[in-house]
Image (cartoon, rainbow, N blue to C red; front, side, top):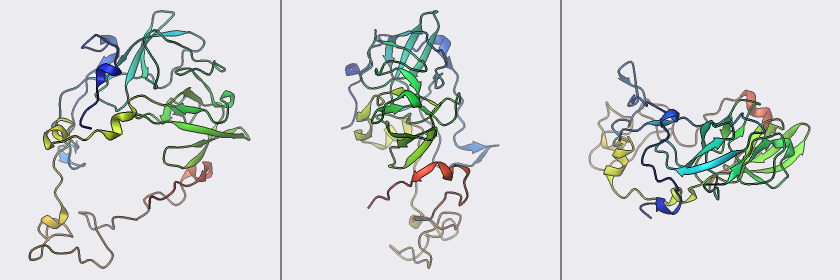
Length: 266
């Protein structure tokens, strides 16, 4: 699969986004004070940033979905909603949401795709997305294409959630979450097909360490095709261990909220 048939999903006839909900997006190309701090970034197509309402803090005011649109800054689609008071906002579009549908944000709302409510009022087994980690902090979990989190239990003021990584985590019950899984689930099957499409996305070429000289990378040098040949296994360009090394802090503040760690891929 080399592309997605957007006509099948998008309902907007406009070629431009809503002007009041757009801001300039400056390119940094992985540089900090002119020096490269993140490798393999640069170029890419020019794009504008769509201001997404992750908080959705307009309570008990119904909103009509005006359109489902493409957003070049994220993998899922976005929807333009118009509230009864006339205000328009962009939100993440869940799968199955259509133009003309009505959604609402409330402490307790109908179990309908696109509606948003507190976790304590969401039944066990429900799929949700755009979940807050802290009350009024805005959605932080499950925001990319096809993603969802399942509510598995309610206990002691916390909701237990199974994340896409298979981790089970506790989140406070007074945090908000939206119903349904996110749109554009086919995004994960897209094959870019050529180097040029990668460059359009702002990704520059990646050179293998084994193809470099010894002064440029720990894996470099040797006559012909040489193995890595290091005692402690593969290294980063800066000499630190790579592959299989734990990067999470030993005493991170959020450890107490994790019931089960994610399962390792075999």
